[in-house]
Image (cartoon, rainbow, N blue to C red; front, side, top):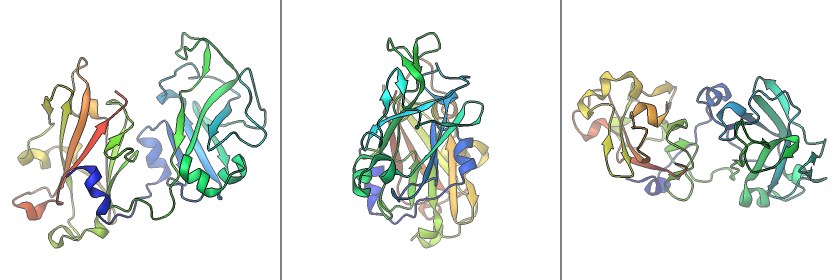
Length: 285
């Protein structure tokens, strides 16, 4: 069952701890982790070491935000060669930076405008440079374009989801070497045989663009592979991977999608698994 078919399922989006979000090595994360109130402060974190643009790794600062959606910030971005000094990031630790904004105030727009557009931005030096090359050898002092999703409370209610969440149906805007997390809220499980299940594992398969299948374990051996065990926190479960590493995808192959099923360690019948499977297509490869 594809991720697009899961929209009808009940789900309470798991609010993972902020430290966990950092641990799975995302480019961008926020506090609160799920942003649902554009009129409340949100702290946006970035990790420069995870960027496709590597020019700013190790940069001592200062850094400035350059943002264009849901609109230009109040007071403007400044010039590309001389950013607005009011829009600085805070250095939290080496290569980790943060900025705190209240979106409706920061952009001077309505909450609905933020819901409709989300938040798009990048980080840059005072002078962003030029030339279009933001690699370590280039002369463009910036990150790639980044974003934070903002949805109204109660939007997209599911019991199984991913982090980052799906966009455009069943696609996640990740590469095969980016971190991916599967989230499951067992408190909303309607299947009696899967309520309060104890340990859970993920039967995981991946497919490259040529249709070749990769799987770290057969379904009968899933319980013997620690990399496939979900982490339980109360009724909530999460499972984080780097797909290229888990599936051992050759360097000359490109991941197309993963197919995931949640199951008990001693699978005997369909009563020992969450109904359906979830497919996530990787669209940044």
